[in-house]
Length: 452
Image (tube, helix red, strand yellow):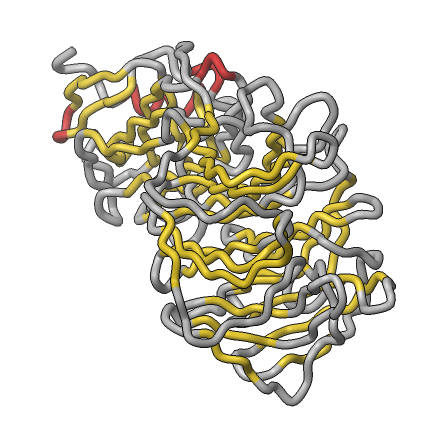
């Protein structure tokens, strides 16, 4: 509508109501998360109580050991996103299962600790650099154990380890940190219950190590100084494997022993989101999970089913069929601080309570609104401005801070009908020096696509 007055911007600011989610702006669509089975040319033999970890420095997944019907294993494999590649180092840790494997931040390879072979419980520390295993000789180390939880903490540059079962069957509740050359026992004010085989992952968005433990079972988080209990187990889940989804910013838990179905759960830092209705890998226990950067999803490998005596050698990935996306659209118009910028913090995905729209580079301490709509517009306004969102709008109002920043939480509901839906977004900042007739400055637009 050429010639539309800049009073549109003023009316938008005046109409702004208190915050809302995205649901009212979205038209329904269809898609879903899915477990997809890979078909590599090569695959490691079936096993359980093995360990895998993503080597972030080389962008490969490392697998070592585990148990099979023929005994404990001592083989090393790497997954490159397409196929499993067996490595043949001259020296390896002895055959074992129940060992812990983690990436050490900033270095290639993996760190291995402990495990058992049915006779001996180990307390040795090994490093893998992509070509060879080397047994390390730290001055201090945890007592021998199997079933210890272990995960890299890239924020603090350490590996965090907890619990396990010792050589006489006692469950442990100690916390250890590996700094690249030595282990250090830490004694925090709060300790989770003694446990073995806790599932651990590092939440990169929040900078905490997350542990799902039993008995309880409970979610615990390590912030570098202390453990904090978060929330009891989701329904019908007693044990499982954990990995962090770096694209969707959630910890993924898969349990194959939940009766009567296997089930996938996601922990977003505040709540559990369950995906029990979707097709799942065959029910099993003692599988392993890791983030696969090349596939953009969570990998699940192997495991066994106690009641049927089945041992698995399959590779699966938990991936979205629709990825959340943010695209820029159009141009903004300046105010006293220049053209304000509008950005999305994260990608819009179902159930994301933390999705945020942020304005920066705006006039400080100014009335501000972020408009959301199911329809795009391209209506010229005076001063070279363009209204990029068509009414009716959903308004997220507020005030910029003294640095000209404003952040509006825009939680995405859990509604499968909203997958692949789009929403148009634009920010408006009240500004007496604004290009739009001294009423407002306006950001460029964003087009959000809602993903799994």
